[in-house]
Image: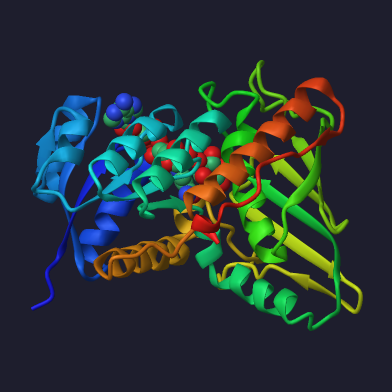
Length: 336
Ligand SMILES: NC(=O)c1ccc[n+]([C@@H]2O[C@H](COP(=O)([O-])OP(=O)(O)OC[C@H]3O[C@@H](n4cnc5c(N)ncnc54)[C@H](O)[C@@H]3O)[C@@H](O)[C@H]2O)c1
Ligand SMILES: O[C@H]1[C@H](O)[C@@H](O)[C@H](O)[C@@H](O)[C@H]1O
């Protein structure tokens, strides 16, 4: 019989728990058998709830022979440490975005993986698995409405606390657009700029919100992405692709429309866990299937590196209020 993939999760916070739950209750072929978290009391309670072994130390979990593959869902600052430890242990690792907190960290991961000679890393850019983005991709790829010329996008969250700083609209939120739009258009970016509209009263003192990131691709497609992190109404993701012969929009999630009190109301998602539930399910099921077949075929370390280089240029553009050229190394054959 097909052997179940024994998975260890490092970081049992919000997304770590939702990934654990979906793997152990909905997906096939894998099981989370071990968890670790620096918040030991909390991590232990998660382990108890899901019948997993708790490891006090994340690297001990990674090196344990009770675990075949790793999921890294700690805060961004520790992604590099645990992904590198997984590569050194020769184990497949799925890391939530961003691959590392700094672009230099993503390059170190790329170099380490190439030195080991085997692709082991997958990055959690789940929008590539969303049914709506997949529809857009097919239409763009087939040039159904001609060449794409410009894209208007929005990334709106309900609100954030003070741990979310001014770098995060680019580095933590719009990194999703950086990845998915590059995948959608099948080309890299040439320049980045970030402009500040008038600030909302709901943003804390150190956060300039909203922010608009403007990217230009190598072929000249112009993209604007509005990050409105304290939109104060819900979690809303928009993407409009303007082509020569038609405008294509990312479908809205299917929610029943209600007629009540002289109004028509269609609920909007509250957060990412609702909006992209299908994408997360497909992303992790495909990861389990690929790992069991001895390969990785989702977003790679190279995609994590390109995302980080682009985000870093956009951050520089934001801080200097200039347009910044995006420069990176050629994609090695290893990742082609
Ligand atoms: N793909 C997506 O849509 C998506 C959604 C949410 C979060 N994320 C990413 O997932 C990661 C986690 O986000 P979250 O919302 O679950 O955050 P969170 O703060 O809820 O959880 C993070 C967990 O990591 C633990 N942790 C911190 N340092 C650690 C260390 N050194 N070793 C072990 N555990 C450590 C914390 O105690 C906490 O339990 C972030 O990198 C975020 O960018 C991705
Ligand atoms: O803006 C949020 C994104 O929409 C989510 O998908 C997560 O990645 C989260 O970490 C970000 O802060």
